[in-house]
Image 1 (cartoon, rainbow, N blue to C red):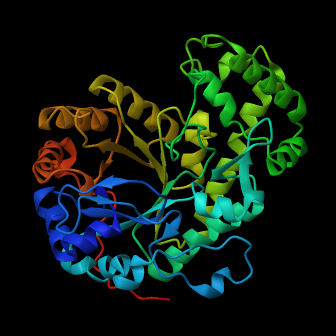
Image 2 (image 1 turned 180 degrees about the vertical axis):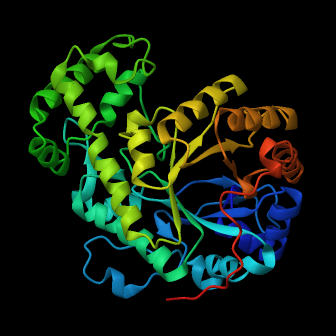
Amino acid sequence: MNRSIWTYPWDVQDLGLDTVCGEIRDACGLDGISLATSYHAGRFLQPRSPRRRSYFPEDGTIYFRPTLERWADLAVTPEVASIVAEQDVFAGLLAARERSGLGVSCWTVCLHNTRLGMRHPDVVARNAFGDPSYFSLCPSNEDARAYVRTLVADLTHTWRPDRVELESPCFMDFVHGYHHEKDGVGLTPDANFLMSLCFCPACTERATRAGVPVEAARQLVRGWICEACEQEVPQARFPDFPGAGLTAFAPWPELHAFLAWRFEPVTSLVAEIREAAHPDSQVVTIDLSEGWLGGCDHAAIARACDGLLICAYDMDAAATHAVLARARAAAGPDKVVGAGFRVFHPEMAGADDLAAKVAAAEAGGARAFNFYNYGLIPQPRLAWIRRAVDGLASNNVKPAIPVPGRTVEKR
């Protein structure tokens, strides 16, 4: 399984499992489906659904039936989406693997969960002023870590999917499309990053144990944010942000040390997830090109799990090649390195544009390819995906992950 498409369970319910599997396999030319098994809120235009033209999923829910015994002693537990009672799409796809020829991957949102953040405010990220980010559980918090570990353990030991794709096992951005976000200041990218830094009690304790001068870093960040809020017109402190990476903060050793420390809770969490998962299920981490912003060291993350899936969003073919080449260099030759593409217009001008970017990613070292998103794009764009994957140089090479032929044994 190395060519997949991100898909929502409600789209499978609306269009029918056989139709969806047939289109993914035949119209798109793919060998896998990446189903949202844990997801957040949103508003989704539904161009192909026979039932509706927009959909609002329940916030912060899972789309599989959990094994209740695994969760009995945990402080943070999941909420099952109500549509699972109507049709268990996840179980249906797993049962149909041999018939459909599609591998099944669990697209798993880890720490981005407003429902659980509101329910458990003690586990969320908090900025330098102590303000909560309810949509973001903190990767340093032990209860949040236990939640994510158990989520993946339950998915893989009970259901044995081919792959788990971890989304947001890291620190999240202050700007994240939350409901009616307001910013009259006009925060620059570097100021937004400062607002994203977590100084919650769990981060403070964990970083202090590591010898990081957390309070000095916090006071510096607070001061810079206050200055940004007082400017008549916003001006970037770091005009080339984020291009210079952590190096830009080297003149401020306390903050630089804190930013470098942020890799530890994320990397160790991914390693714990991989350890908790069933060995037959591959675990990869989804990330953007500038992973350090969320505390992701791509080389360390790749060592901690089975590989990386880098979203090549909003970039041309040359940039796509460069980003995937860096990811391959970080991961090494033996780990999975995948590229993700949004088949959205105008980000993708057409079939030629998508094909060029997919080819560039492959030339840069990608050997797995995901496309976003099955239910969000018009029917004719499925052919764009087919054209892109038909042009891959690796078409005559044996896939890295063979499509399974086993039936599901629920455990």
